[in-house]
Length: 137
Image (cartoon, rainbow, N blue to C red; front, side, top):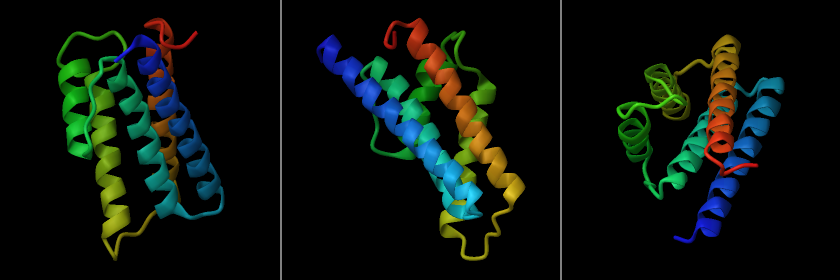
């Protein structure tokens, strides 16, 4: 992949992550907690996909994205991402799954606020990574 194409893909994915986080905040304000959790998770996932694009890696599944991120950015020394970030993202995925598929799951405001804050945290860390690695100006 040409460098310009790679940078464009990273930007598109990161911008989508920002859009999803904005949607999560709107849904939170509207007290649609299950949908807000969903959008927050996908925001974080898109941000991580942007990171994976910098090394020309991708996956079509949640577990695949998680696995590649873990192998490339957690197990290898990184000053940008930590084991705690990985645990956070994994936990967000579990909450998203329960919220989307468990008919009796009750989505609390506090848990939703935490999920949105975690997504914001991940986007901020990804933005630092993208700036310091020269993908973003």
